Length: 418
Image 1: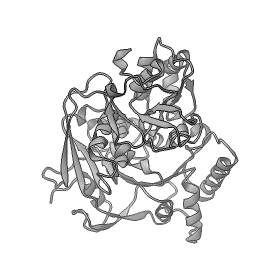
Image 2: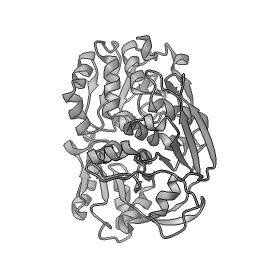
Image 3: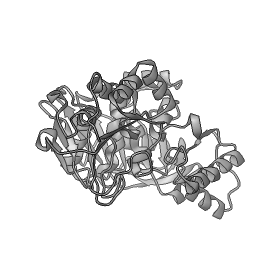
């Protein structure tokens, strides 16, 4: 029977029949992930179970990325708890301080996730790894604790929505715009407990980084997972990260719940307006909307190609007076690469604030909190009410070029208009 990508990957990790949506299957996991916010809760459940060891110290990753550098006593205590647990369990992949990066950019870069993997994480954007052809999904901390102990979990095999992408991308339009367009059409619950499988002629034109950007936001449509096939680009990316990988794709004739056709030809940059990621409009409809802050970074758009895109717009220009432009490279390696390429110098000369690899303002953590009445344009993934600070602030989601253009203009604007 022909299988979707989700069915095919799950089948390789279970002795049950995963060939049909709705079946309950018990799956062996490739990696279990938690961070400095969610790991303390998982550790509490781990202790309550009476567990003594994790199932495999090489297949648990603990990444203290949300509040690092520690912003206050409470966050310091959370990191201390995670650090001590990692030491006690002998966890190989523990990240803090100068080694830490935003988890969903860091783990692919280090070769810890790859095609055909089943990854569960106590963070909703774990679905990012689907850009590499992994079945990756977020779970609650209690389920993550169980996976840390058992090395397995259960899934209901999700039905799959196929997103068939075609056409040609215009200048200043990229992966972020494609996924915002998809979410605008499905709504925030249109793919609830379903897999979004991306394919079509445009797929091969996207970089692996762009694919991870799209998979990252599958959850914003309610998706259980966002999946791209593994092709030659994927294999090369994994090889550079020190990991062996093979090509992987859905079977011809696989059964889909529905097929969503997306032609990118002529598409403008897309912007998600407050207070939901599906409130999507072309950038031209928002021209002139005043800004107080722009943010370039996060697990969605903090990779090196994102920084290059933003720097190309900012080069030779200045950030608008009284506007804050916060740039957060997603990992130490990306930070170093941006330094080597002169991108950080461009940002600094433009008047940006360049910070360390951290989730920071994306979740309203630190390094870019909004005051009452303030408005931010951001390359992050969520714009819920109060997400980046005050309940009376606003967050607009966009691609890195649009965020950079907004920093210069002090208002939402198409980068070409500069």
